[in-house]
Length: 106
Image (tube, rainbow, N blue to C red; front, side):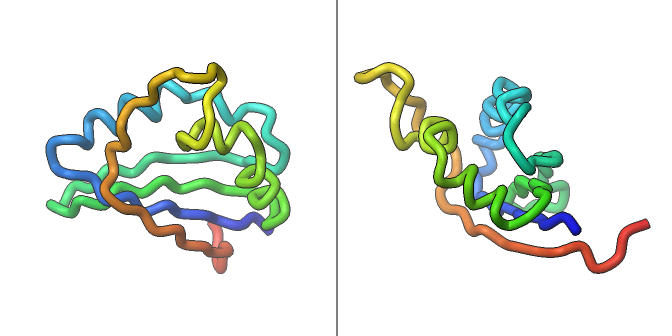
């Protein structure tokens, strides 16, 4: 059964559009990642400042392998494809990772 990882990112009210643009710009970057099944970026509609990045994985090992990869490090600002390349400042002010399994699916 799939596992779900949710990254709850606190984003200032005036920065949400930028977060959406950044995710849209990297839409296909997860293609071919072993065990990756899909992702959604959820925008709050009730005044909250937490955006949710919901990802689905075949198993915990696939998720752990991805978070240990160079691609993960580069995409999260821990290295660069080109030395000395400037990276945009983070949009979020904090984040928290939640882990779930699917209890019921229809």
